[in-house]
Length: 306
Image (cartoon, rainbow, N blue to C red; front, side, top):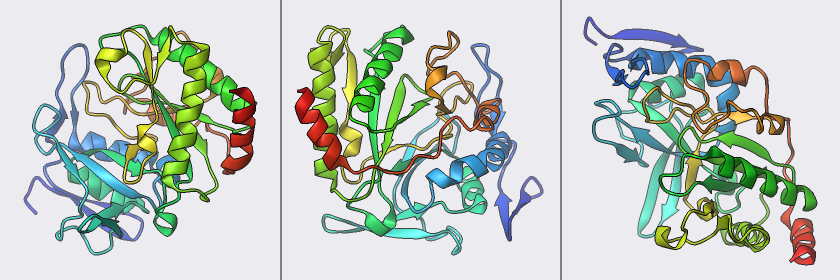
């Protein structure tokens, strides 16, 4: 360690912070600057709300060692120099394995922040059932260049109504980027192909009901000004930004859970919360404690709606 480095205590662990004054988010456009120390402080404070959604899940780490205006590194393999107390998950891939980082503690979360991991992206399954997801995610992605969040809001309402018809409880989250995620907790009983197929069918039903407003077209040129219902995150080894994860954008916006009754808040937008106030939102406990549901009954209900 150098004279500029620091140590922080996290439970039984001591985490070294290197160059805490390094600016990761430069000031500009009305946004303040944020340093690595600010990022660490945020993750330390939000950890009680964030860790339940990370525990037991392989992660992909989005790192910016030179700040968000520098090169981006999408890290899957855990480096050998990471502390031995950080959990790893050996995940099969074609021709070998990937040793993903797993974040089960405040100390691990702070170490990742010290490594300039701005955003942890989580698997939709856990290490004890890698092939069977316990989450289903719909990504509501507005058209390129579209600034009208109203399109995202109306799509979320329509999707929420369909999920209610299917008797599938769901939760809502700003992405901290451009849109919203709608997440359905599942019982881990079906593989990724089955879950993604179900999500695709739900999206198809929505498009059939609102063909001028929504699309599932994978090619951007085929979407026009319609909102894209993206279900591709529901595949094996795909990831989604973790709840309360910071995004690499000016002002350090945060992917923030919200209650369904907050959807019509006129101040709501995809970057509504930042590291300056996301913990305040977390303390409202916007997500109820939901148990996972089986897909087979919902699939039968969906067939009746199509």
